Image 1: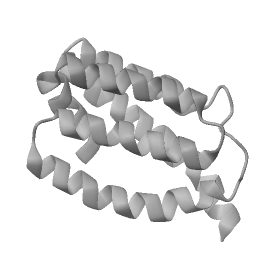
Image 2: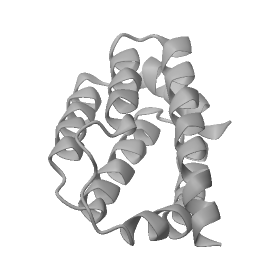
Image 3: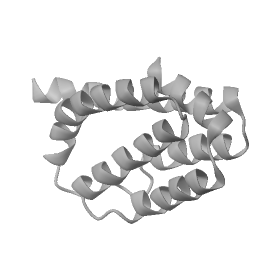
Amino acid sequence: ILEPEIAREAALHATLSDIAAMRQSLVQTREAVTWRQYENVDNLLHRQIAQASRNNVLLGLFDVLNAVRRTVVWGRLRSEGARPPADHHSFADHERIVEAIAERDLGGAAAAMRLHLQQVERRLIPVREAAE
C-alpha cells in the first residue's frame, strides 16, 4: 500500500537528477556480485524513489518499514551466498518503475511498484517456508 503511493508521488515530483540517480542504481543492481551488494543498491533505489516523492511523511514511514524488511527478508537471502542471477525478476521490475517515474506516469509507477512487491512476496514464500 505504501510503496505504490510513494512511486506515484515520485512520478509527480522527481527531478531529472533524481531519475538519473535511480537509473545509476539500476545499473549497479545488475553489476552486484553478491546478494549483500544487491541488497544495498536495492535499498538505495527504493529510498531514492521515496525521497523523490518529496513527502517527508511517506519517507519516514518508508524508513521504518524498510528497517523491518531488511532484517526479515534480506537475512534469508544473504544466506544464499551466490550472486543474483542475470535474469533476476527485480531487474525488469525496477526498470519499469523507474521508467514510469521518468515518464510522469503516476498510475503506471504505482502499478509497477505494486506488481514488483507482489512478485517479491510470491518468491519469498518458498524461502520463508524452507527456513521454517
